[in-house]
Length: 308
Image (cartoon, rainbow, N blue to C red; front, side, top):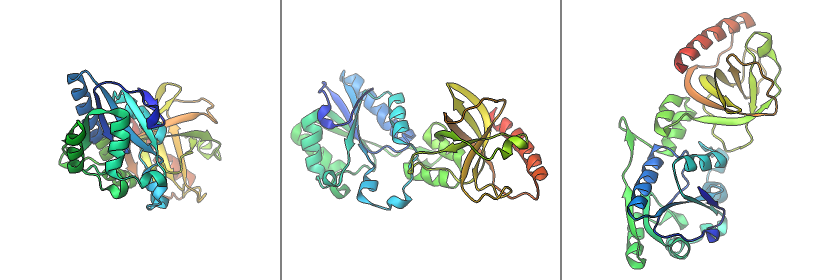
């Protein structure tokens, strides 16, 4: 996948099939759009182009930005788009000045002028441009005027549940990672640097790696204990993770820690990825460390069953 950090850097190719959006999560609904794009591109011997925006428009415009959390970091989103098989990714720098461009001018002066699409494919609820006034009807009218076709992909559902980034974020905020994973089409994950902790876990036979997340907008799933997979140096390990305030130890600050099964490496300052499979229980306070240890033993058995 070729990546362009400015639409002006795009090198024109013939018969482009284009879509536009923020694509937080790159979930199965987005995949339906990408699959349709690739199918259409094969028919016309063309190439696929995704146009996305960074930073997220809501951050720039200050729309509830203090509460904004995203399923994927920008780096992870790019990786997911590449995995989806996209040929070209154009990352438009979103500014307040750019936000003032009308939907008509954006398509005419940017997309048509720089990319010359043969076809635009959009999601069922897609809106774009100033005040999100751009619509399927407007795109279709402009397409007839300048010479491209437009197709809208219908809403995608699993078990009658609509697939959307908003729905997935709601599920994750409630700790329902298995349901979120079903809509994502992959396991929700976080990546972070391993930082020193207080070593209490090692002292009770369950050493943990404490994770520091650099991206302030990364969505962290609800507090609790999870069965998870851990990826480090190209290898996968089973484990269980705790997100919360560790009430038995009573430190009072949010931590993300993971006990990696059958693992005894020193990995401070290294990056690991935790993929969440299932939430096993709430975080709770135990009367003493012995009670905590007994619960952790049960948690490990349960996690191994879920990870089979």
